[in-house]
Amino acid sequence: MSEPTPFWLAGKPATGSATTTVRHPFDGAEVAVVAQPDPDQVETAVAAAAAVAPAFAALPAHVRAGALAGVSKEIARRGDELARLITAESGKPLTWSRAEVARASSTFRWGAEEARRFAGELTRLDTDPPGEGRLALTRRFPRGPVLGITPFNFPLNLVAHKVAPALAVGAPIIVKPAPRTPLSALFLGDLLADAGLPEGSWSVLPIPNDRLGPLVADPRLPVVSFTGSGPVGWSIRDTVPRKHVVLELGGNAAVLVAADYATPADLARAAGRIALFANYQAGQSCIAVQRVYADRTIVDELLAEIVAAVRALHDGDPADPATDVGPLIDVAAAERVEAWITEAVEAGATLVCGGTRHGTSLSPAVLTGVPPTAKVVSEEVFGPVIVVAAVDGVDEGFARINDSAYGLQAGVFTHDLATAFRAHRELQVGGVVIGDVPSYRADQMPYGGTKGSGIGREGVRSAMTDLTEDRVLVLTGLDL
Image (cartoon, rainbow, N blue to C red; front, side):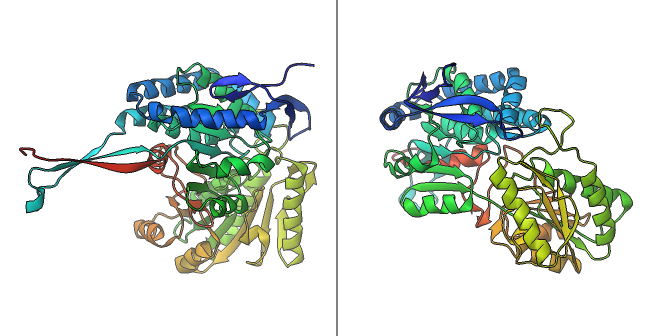
């Protein structure tokens, strides 16, 4: 029997007394056996992070930037190996795994660049008589060591979005990857181990979810950055209300196709983007298209285009480069989505296509006539499901988008600049994408939601701000 894949304890490989088996979501084949840290090893990691925090915060920017740049290059160099690992542990089609690797490399590159730019701000205080001869220098310093908790759907890039900003600002980080997909995070540990960072400045601990509580509560980790489900995220914040908690949670992302987006080329483009990005990871993305609202004057034509585009997608083995839609993460997830589709149909919806399950795989579904209270509309389906509905104009379209417990991102297909600015003003979401689906995300832009979709913002620079706090230095007796 081969040795289990080690975890990373204060920057060094280690094994514990227990292991977990990672299986391929598509066929259940064993991918790897991973070592789990014992409680005393978790304590060692936390103590090391707390101990190194002052020195790490004082590390010169060029050292942190150089380490991050090196990791970025190594991710790119070993991209094919990493992509196949992502596909094996998550079931993500290889095409999308390769895209994730490229994004992760970019995320670390942005971290390196922002580490060099993360300076301070000077403020003249002699704008009033008491401030004569005074100058204020405001700089941001780490709040302290970070606990980064990541989900299964982007097992590399969402880890990168925790690690790169933390290391860029000099905050030690302990990464707790999703139990089903720890391998990409552990691979990243291999790259970090060669980056020359101080011992204790990072750890990757694949502990089970039922052992997370003590880590969340530990006062030596004053920042908790969580990406995942709403119930878990909000329970973390309720448990530690005095900590700085960043939550990137779910959504039921909506698209409005306005009446002016009506030419055959317009409708074909909108439908193609909607079909692809509702299903690109079997819908397992918090900004995957779920709700589509189209002006009544174009809804029939758009629906026909969407159905044709959905039927043209290839599902099957995610290791096949031709596969567009792979499996869900496990049978339970596939059964839940199947049950939600059945619930909608029983409530009066029409299943236009798809919705057939085979094990962990579910053929992409398109539904119409769905009651607003059905789970496939009101909750985050996190599966390959599109709900299409007609609206009478932009007013109703915006109201339907806002009629949600979530508010992550929305897309608006329109050529009208006034509608675009109105969408930015009125839609209760963290990001509005004009002329495309809400699934677009650039790793350097602020990313996050409102309402049930979380608090705080990611995107490398935004996360660096979130992980730090202002400290003001006032200089007195200056000849300005």
